[in-house]
Image 1 (cartoon, one colour):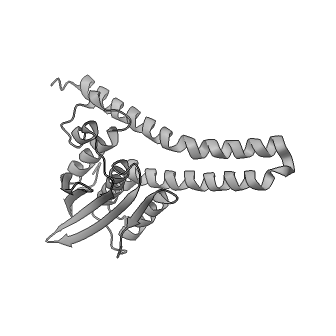
Image 2 (tube, rainbow, N blue to C red):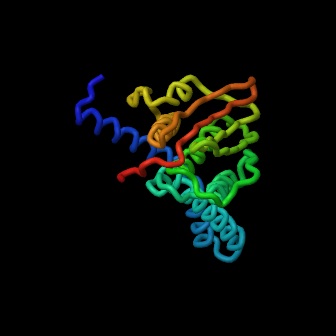
Image 3 (cartoon, rainbow, N blue to C red):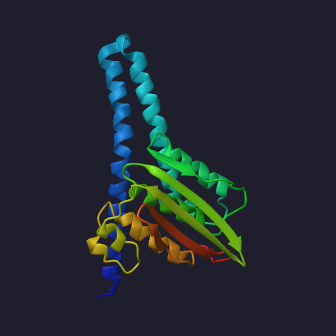
Length: 224
């Protein structure tokens, strides 16, 4: 493979562009609903004002939850030590609010997470959602031992993982073959490697997928 600086920049830009497409796709619906609510108020006045305000309010809250989730899942802030399990769980609950997915995440503590693990968990939750298009249970569990912290995210239900998504779960995937739907899997694999771990997929049975990763508790932070 050509590894010239120009090629590397091209790959990085493509991944950024695809992630941007994914974000816009997910955000356009709630933001569009806010706009529709405002337009109803302007056009219909008092007759539909209450319903329009309710629509705009619910949609604005949904957009806010998505942005808070994506800021940590995709932004620089999620790469550093200091995120706490309880905070990450709150973000996941907010993201899944109103969806057909049920989050099962007992016992999330206030203990700080190793660098990048909060970001990884949120991205694994996103992967689980993508594999449960009709909804289902998403379980999250963590365990710390011997200087490592492991996290597992389980998808249970009518699980579906296309070959394109499966092929993207590795840092060796061809970036030119990625799409807005599959780029997040590739991104998650890269985040796992940067955190000192490796993203692993297991399929215990036909209705279960499990994403796991283990990262060292002490690792130089990005940019250090």
